[in-house]
Image (cartoon, rainbow, N blue to C red; front, top):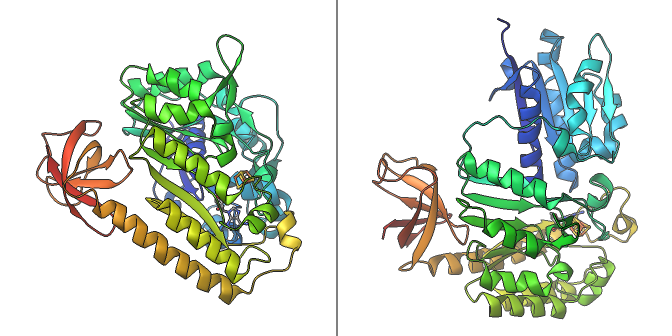
Amino acid sequence: MTQPKKLFVKTYGCQMNVYDSERMSEALAGEGYVETDSPDDADMILLNTCHIREKAAEKVYSELGRYKGLKAEKPDLKIGVAGCVAQAEGAEIMRRQPMVDMVVGPQSYHRLPALLKQTGEGAKALDTDFPEEDKFEHLKARPKARRAPAAFLTVQEGCDKFCAFCVVPYTRGAEVSRPVERILREARDLVERGVREITLLGQNVNAYHGVGPDGADWSLARLIRALDGVDGLERIRFTTSHPNDMDDDLIAAHGEVAKLMPYLHLPVQAGSDKILKRMNRQHTAESYLKVIERLRAARPDLHLSGDFIVGFPEETEEDFQATMDLVRAVEYGSAFSFKYSPRPGTPAAERAQVPEDEKTDRLQRLQALLTEQQRALQDAMVGREVGVLFEKAGRLPGQMVGKSEYLHAVHVAGIEGQVVPGDLRRVRITESGPNSLTGELA
Ligand code: 5AD
Ligand code: SF4
């Protein structure tokens, strides 16, 4: 029997990349590869990269630099670069790092086994096409192995919004939604394998409009209502959304679908209408706040999360204060905030830039406010009872860790054996720590 070959996958960036990496590694399992945690004993290294900010993109080159020695020692080692840097800079990667054997863009993953065969003895393979076919249908079926209780499922990819700072419409291409039946099939398969919570993924997930079994276009709300009927599935989440695609039915679903969790990631990016306009966001601060108000009317305990960019070109202190005001008005349960990073090929990269120290200063002030809000909402959980989906053993003996409806990590001591991963239990929260909650079974 031949020894299995070893595959080391390193994933950067968003949850969609996490999902794609899983699917790629399953496809490569069909080629005889098993995953390893260390690049040192790998026969193939695959970097699944992110291009969203300059820092993320630069990581690829420094990581590749580290593999130079390995490749010299082991010329048969295959090195592949996948993801959004591959899409955006494929040819440049090949030129800057001649040890790379394969470059594959996010829409061509199903061609990975074929690409692999083209490499060897100095031959290289590059595929950054946007083919018509659904790559997920062509990636080899997942083996029936057990899965962790919470899983991702990509339902939509790409973006047609063209925010002035963002590379996604270029790297991931136009919006495409997967058909409803394929998603339902994949969801049932995940549940059979132990999954209890599914997060539907898409760069613009609430713009989902996949073809339904009746031949009509289904909205995300309709898809969620159908998933609500999948036996054994306990929780549904979705990320990430645009405020303009939050339609009436999706808002209503937050009050009506019991499996839909009361946590929503709804990026606004900035609070100044002038900046929102220059960002080409197509909404105002007020229209965003209106959407939040309606969501909270449907689901009063909803926790909100958001993305923010500070130091977008021409952002003044006054504009920045408008972002702070918006944050104060919403009270976020969690948030991600970034300094604006000019991306090649995007309109905003050409405009007058805010000095770096200004960006740093604004980011610090914004993050201080967001951390305070996050902490306040988390502390408010103490004394309350929440549902926890247990995922794994904790670091302390007998301890188990899971997630609440609001996506807080919850630790419960002394319950190993009583509770197994995949169990959903009521927990009374007794303590709030820096990054997690502690409680006891109710
Ligand atoms: N600079 C900084 N942050 C960015 N994001 C997207 N593009 C940029 C950029 N050029 C942020 C946005 C988006 C999140 C995924 O990354 O906040 O919602
Ligand atoms: Fe990028 Fe999101 Fe704007 Fe699309 S909606 S361009 S993915 S920030």
